[in-house]
Image: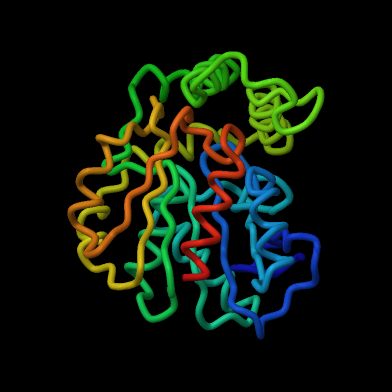
Length: 268
């Protein structure tokens, strides 16, 4: 589905079904140098089991036009504008990595519009090393290689995961390269800089009143579970779940476990 958001064309994947604003809506927000496709399994299931789905391509990512936005706050405003464009008053939000910060800030800015909050592969503060920031600016393929290695718990996943001939690490690498090819702007560096500079996370977390799930990879090296302490303590009643044998790229490494936890949370 294409929407006009802040004067630019924005793409949302709707899970293989026409978007129906009469159903409860879940907005899925991807992380740095990714697009909507990281949520394919989860969004298709949601769309065929009682929900409407908006899996966004953030500005400058995937099929959405424009330049990547430079701050988490600006992207949160964009998400709210997207809800307006879709005619959705209230929605649940699920965000991965950078997307989790965006979801958190969106809930802070418009608490009456967010019904549930799922923060996947999250941390706060979400600092990025100087080496990685520099690589994302001047040696993007090096940055892609570094993040791809650190985002997975294993170099060799179980056979046929999730289908014959599928490579978890290869798929993630190609997606990041695809985002880079589609947009000559420094998308990776812009995304990382937004994560690195976001400073409102603790205040936003303390303001959250809706049900909240923190879904973590037990072997995550990018946003290790211990780095969620600020959020889990600040968000009243937050539910924390760790998925075993899983790194930062949760949706690809343990797709069924992610779906089970997200769907159970959103339906409860």
